[in-house]
Figure 1: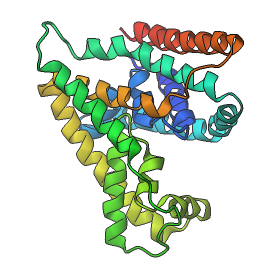
Figure 2: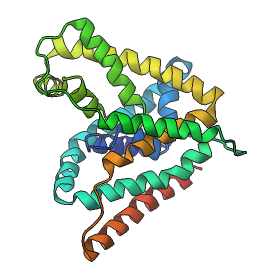
Figure 3: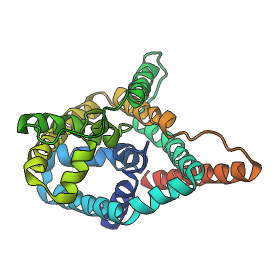
Figure 4: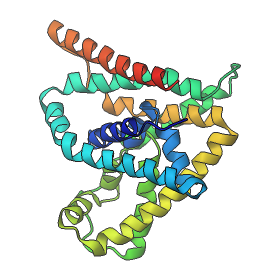
Length: 267
């Protein structure tokens, strides 16, 4: 089937634009948009079809970079001004993606074992989100080996849905230093960290691709649990007035409807 390259770029745009929103991970948004498994396969089996996979990943990366530049700040501004409305939109998006993820799980018969994977995924991300963050000052001169290992850990958060990379960096006492190193393009820090991230992405995607092929039901239910586990952190509370309720419910329906429409077109 011929790839829709514009759609790939636009989905990358959406993922990049929402990655810096607290409570929304890039992996979750990729799963919600129905492009997650294709990303995993393209990275894990890159050399099986180098030209097509390279073009796919390049377009997605360009879209992601453009999304971060164009939409991250406006989204963060909207999050400050209209936190309830925007967060309810993302909750609706998660809800709208649930049927698509259940379809990918290929559940043909109900077993008591299957919900266990959903609960494990949900609990893992929910517990991760309440762990205390370290002091955000960050170590100024960590060794290269430490940075490579930190990159490996960060890669898991990049690949798995529901886990915020920003919060993970805070937990490792690295957030400020990473942001400063990126802004200054400080290569002695960024190169070993990037090498660890690259290696971690390759290893994690290999494991995920194999799990998706051999155990699709369990894997997709676990991933759905990861995505749903991000909801407690994302949930902003209930509206306090009738106008707020109307706006939040409309935003919830808009987010869910938009994602449901996108996923139905993928079918």
